[in-house]
Image 1 (cartoon, rainbow, N blue to C red):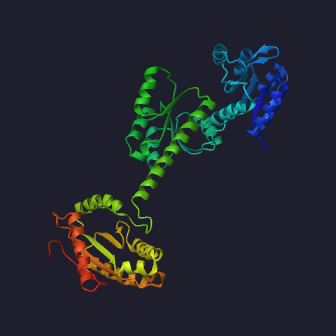
Image 2: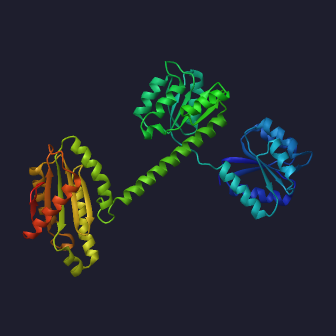
Image 3: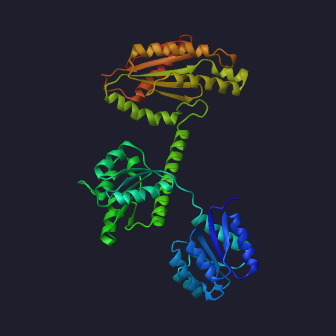
Length: 433
């Protein structure tokens, strides 16, 4: 197994050392054992460790004393202290000294669980990847930070003014914006944040990390009020930058996933699962607003009410599975032939309705007659299926019409078609009897 991260182990007990070595190997670490404090200091000075795990009682000094050496040699490396002493003063003393977490030596399975939980929460976070818009006017700072971000697997676009950055931000998709507070040009990093927060909802929620030379309370409040998600004070510590960038991008992608799942759930809620058309609920939610929008533009709108003839006989004679396949074939055909902007709904049972936008009476009749012929030619399950279609059109100049009235008239038209022998198209205009 190839290990990517190292853990330094300092443990007096041979039994616990064997257990810890095996445990950390299973967790993906390369365990390095220090037999004495000078060896431990040499290892830490060489670098490359992601974790230190040690007994509270070390030969030659206490863990509280040794942690000062750790913080001097590898100040960002977390430290686990193992102890059988559960006295609160000891825990408080450990935290004050700089120890990250205290693990009690109760049972070996419990220790394994505690250490595993710590590693998964603090050291095994996945490597975030994303596209970053980096705004910085210092060439030296840009070179250093851009190189570091790219080493993290990030795609980095750079601009040295807020004006150019905002234009790029609007044109492309990003997972994070990192901006210095002070920039060339008329706009500052603060103005950039405010401009981003006034864009459309999708753009406005992109996280922003502000880099600043100021570390006073008033400036922090000012940044947060403007809409920055986080800030980092110069000189930038790379390990801190890595954690802040990773957290912001990870959280952004989690939000993206939640929004995507919500959209999928909503789509399921408004879609007829058998045919893929809108269901009645989805059609009503969509149709009222859409109808108002196209009517406001003065477009004619036509409705086609489609009822499959003698569908009950198909279910009775061939079974509901065959009936479902017939409905699926008809729904798929209607979805395929309608233009983008039109809407198809299965109202329930064997009834469908089609809304045709920017469609006058002549075109609506042509479309309906073609649909009637194509439904008859579908031959699903080797069955001849026919449809009666009722059509109505709301002229563009008619301001008083509403969707409820149009639905009612189309429904009357389909009954007229059925009464005249089925497998035909019937038109009924608004206001006619």
